[in-house]
Image (tube, rainbow, N blue to C red; front, side, top):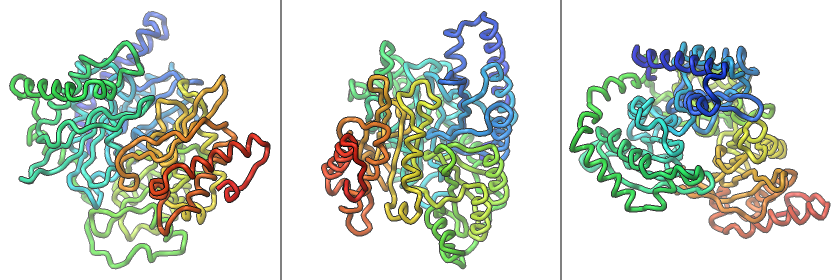
Length: 570
């Protein structure tokens, strides 16, 4: 893991002191709310429906056991005993009083944590593959590059107030586990024919009201030039991006409107930078080596031959957990293990302070003190010995972090929705609870198989509903909560295929109908699927019409005052 140096910590201390002064002036009335708003946002502080919300940055999802314990302490001392993991690999707190915000910032910096640029119109937390550095299919470890780009983008004076928020994701494996095409900039590490390392660069992706998958602007760029090229992209966006309309201010709108002219402007800016002052800003082999040294295999990890297939371990439940939650590893004798945060008693992505401390203990005992936050709102331990799997399973089970559901229906992505967020049109958590209650049986879940179900409470798409095989979007209809259903979305992963938004299947449904609709869609899938065929593959083979018909029948039956079964609807 990257460890902050003296300069990093100096920046955090200075930023925390600056924020304390700004907060005091705001509370005293000498700094207006309008003046304070962009300052608190770029330190991660929102004002939500019921209380302020703090978003803590976890760059590229990598977090230490010490940091997990600090978050647990903050949850107990300043919040209500829990936190929330986001699709951006961040951690959120929803109940911290604003007048205690500066105290929390200082507590965070003790563990090299902060909320800098987790909000506001700036370059946000850079995300990556949850299996970075350990994935069996990884070609190039993206973490050193992500860290260098974090350093480049943090408090960059030219990009502090962009037209809108700006998100970057980076991967180095065959499998896209970071949804790079849905970011303002997506970076894919690769080697050219000469074996040199560089980036395929995508630009202009995003969800929201106008979901657009990013376009390739550069098939290969030498890695030394990446910060300079990103600077060219953001400069052009900063100059020409819309500032008169928040809905049209994202770079995806500029790319869609200008097309090749945008690409030409970026490449011209890049060439000018490269020929002039930018030559001094190229990444050097020395700077890369210094950062990359932080990401070497931990000293306690020793690759060993595997003498036992871990699937042969223990009882049926343990074997199911290994098959579903345990991932292949680049090192013989090791696995990465997911700890799903989708228990029956908590909102998806929520984690209690006891679970945070428990996860820290698991990380220390089984994973070299390291954990990860995933794009799917779960935790992951990246350095688990095969010999420790059975013990880890039993320990994680006591923390309610061992349900064998990874990738299944109940492993859904869900934003906090109207229960917390002031921007939401509808609640997400009760919809997730209704669906989860309907599908509790593990045998049933495994029979349905791999499926992405994503829920957003508004068009801002924090729940990534556009990319769900089944997407659910909360909408306001005359002051009431209604929900649009989309089918066939993809985040770009191997399961889902090329990144694309789902398509709406007719008018919206009442909250009381949503779980019935999901049940009808899955019933249709079970009737139409071929052997070993996944939901998304059946949908693409048959088209959406039979699924739309099943969903519409739910509406008809509901409005007629009669509830029916999945089989009858399908």
